[in-house]
Image (cartoon, rainbow, N blue to C red; front, side, top):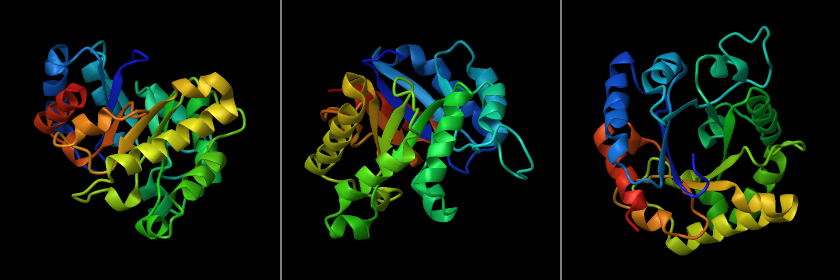
Length: 252
């Protein structure tokens, strides 16, 4: 993945049986026709990790998971370690998604442990941060983002192997996205925090936007400063919508 490329990450959430691998196969076949500055990644359910990784081997498509456990191994029924994810052939994992934070009660400190585990296993972590509608209306967006960043990044984080996705919680699954100014304000804030903490290394961390991103808005969102790609769900479930979004993201 080139440092200047737009990273388009599809998050399949809890969708997709083996038959859905045909969508990934279509995306793989179309990858040579995509703009050169677009990198494609798909976070599939655990059940599809190995098959998807095998299907896309050598194609340039990155296959990853949507979560991981912080421990290497142990008596954690139903959980999957970062090492097991890497062993499946995957190369990245999402950590700290708002649906995990809200639905599973994950704290930022727990997210930091998962992020450290991902890097320990050689995976690229995609850290999600974002505010709720109530927090936005209270004017505390940047405070919330700043606190999530500070607590979700382990002290020994390898900032050169890190992606951060800003996903305003109130936009996920909705039909609207924030204004260009609102998105840019948060992305610039995240960038400034990273540079403050990590020096110039922080200037090269890929920053994604997520939250109802699709082919209709990918172009103008990805044209914004400090937006290096997208994390998108609904529009990633079919090859047709995924590829349309990927092409739109590069049509600047």
